[in-house]
Image (cartoon, rainbow, N blue to C red; front, side):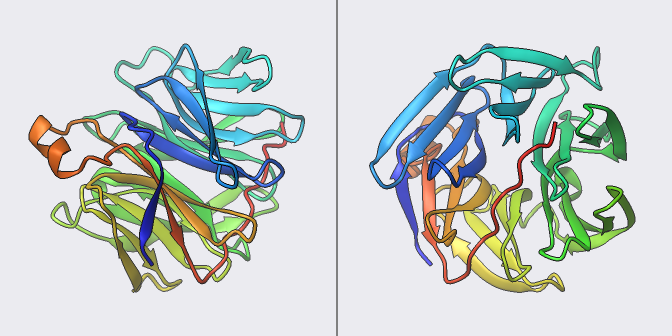
Length: 287
């Protein structure tokens, strides 16, 4: 499995890839660049939308448009008019905090985590269809990738600066989680687990920031594959393509010296890895 550079986006913080099945397009953000991007692999068409805030995670809505987790809370966004409507902010007034990553479960609930650069004061939240917000996991360092097993019995959630992908028992009917335990535990030398996705076989794919690689773990947490990347800071991954067998990987150029950028000129670009396994379509937010 060899990564292919599919678009030279040169993002500062490329993140949150999201495949739109209807449009056959991959969306992703540049958090610090304050833009949302859309790329159509079949035609090579690329579009960029400037936004007034740092958008960190996004999902499509059943009612049309999108929902964002941004630096200052949740928003609805209409791609046609580019109008943003503020919803709520569960960490209003907390300094140097922002949303970081999240996904929608198969009942249409949005799970979104926050981050700060020091300490473990962040959290993972669940927003239901009625727009109510519940704190589900506390004392998080940097909240990152979220995903579910194909049978919805397990939820995965990354606590980045603890270098762990946690697993929880998951109740799809109620949206409750229990029995937190480490699924994959690493150390700082390995790299920082970042965004993740789960394929149709129940294997977890995770971008490892600072490591030049994307990992695939089997349902027991054992390494199934290691994909070498041409960039040191892959940030997240998402299945797309007509057959959902193309893994799109975002990357980051933030923090690289000029010397580093010479060594990895594709830092911040969008990559694709053709796989022998299919992903699963992402659900829309029910609210």
